[in-house]
Image 1 (cartoon, helix red, strand yellow):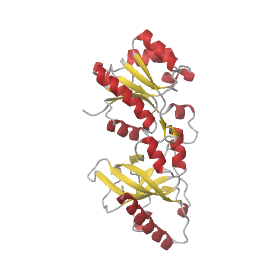
Image 2 (cartoon, rainbow, N blue to C red):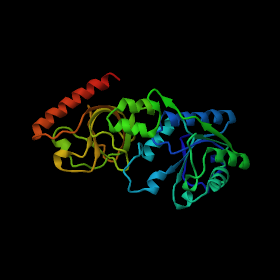
Image 3 (tube, helix red, strand yellow):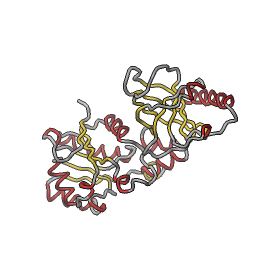
Image 4 (cartoon, rainbow, N blue to C red):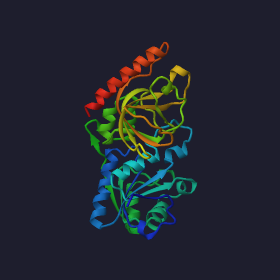
Length: 314
């Protein structure tokens, strides 16, 4: 049975209640998040109940500041993929809206955790805040748990060799093109997921057909060219491939909406509308402006050779 996704806390069937659940935004599902989920997993096994994750969509930060720069490491699709890989049984991806954001901490504990989802046990990070104005903290949650009848575990914040594991330090690593440092904190390669969208077919004309993907709503890693791993997630070409991708605003053609264009090695087929997951393995070079198409095509050949070499060593 696959992971079940619940988006409304008011109409939950009995089979989807009683879980041991990790609560948070889990942007990136990094090692710190995974350690919180692992505590929930241990308790789920002990209590013989499902393992759940409770999160919010849109991210509360985007909800309150819709025009702020994009910061998310993952869209909801990428987060779902990662949680399935971690063996989560139920994802409670609650719609973060005016009603939910207006709940006081006590109302959130009672209406959502207790009455709505009937959670057995919840695990939160030590810095967890909840309820209107982020007024509730972990001690409050424990108090409500005792009163309402659910157990609360507070997970310690996880430190890596590089200091505390956090979405912020992962964003900084990606902005600087340090894909390995980001991966060390994520516990996996940083991936961009979504459907292949229509491009202008310029790559095809140059002999390098690319699969184009939107970066809308996502934190932008350092612009430039990367060695990548490509998972085609559905359709006739489903499987894992290697490639080179350009993340940028295509300075050659005077455009300025960033997107990700991936050239998949040794592949032919139509991927339009197919969902891909692109792992950024290594930053090769920044975006360059070329004097004409020939130097651009020469450079693309060099990029591909370099990417093949890097990926063959994984």
